[in-house]
Amino acid sequence: MNPIGINEVVKYVEENIGSFHTKRLQNLELLQLNKILKRKNPYLFKAKNILTAQDLVKVLLDAHLSSQEETIFGEFLEGLARFICGTVYSGKKSSAEGIDLEFSNEGIHYLVSIKSGPNWGNSGQINDMKKAFNKAIKILKTNNPRIHIIAVNGCCYGKTKKIEKDGYQKLCGQRFWEFVSGSENLYTDIVEPLGHKAKEKNDKFFESYAQIINKFTHQFMNDFCVDGKINWEKLVKFNSGK
Image (tube, rainbow, N blue to C red; front, side):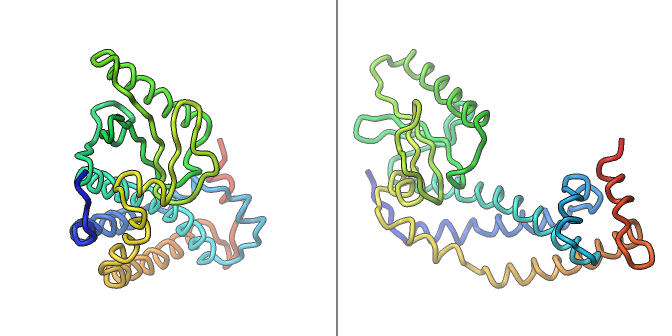
């Protein structure tokens, strides 16, 4: 074990957090209104009594961006976890499909699938993860039958009451960051560095966000409004008509 200092974590975050903001902005700039409209539920917006084009566009955009940002930031946190574990336990990205990290500690070889939070998937996705664990374990035991392997679903935030699952462990939040670092307090130590240049990056993002809102509102009014009112029949036909 090679304990990691917070300065090493800060340096990694400052050098790499920019990729999150860049991808976030790129995702915003590549958006197309018609594609978002086809993915969302128009009946829900009518039920919520949304009356203005700008309000509807903003709800659409915010819902889409929230989902995308969760994915993009999850990728960043996965990279951070691998960096920390690589420094402390010589952990590395696994060559096995579906395994994000593997390392050994105190005679145990760990296979880790990293997710953002505890409620990340449905039963089918969880079964796929378990299949990936079983396949990787089978390959490792073919080469070394005596190897002691534990599969872990690591979640970067949140909590779970039950750690032992069917064939794997689930470690969330503090437990996960302590698992990859050996530090009980790392989960709170990493909060401050994540804000590196956040205001500067967010100012640029929200400037583009405002432009997209105005652009999409104008487009939506041209395509789906009549005399200033949303034409719900036309919107539903666009979204759901055969």
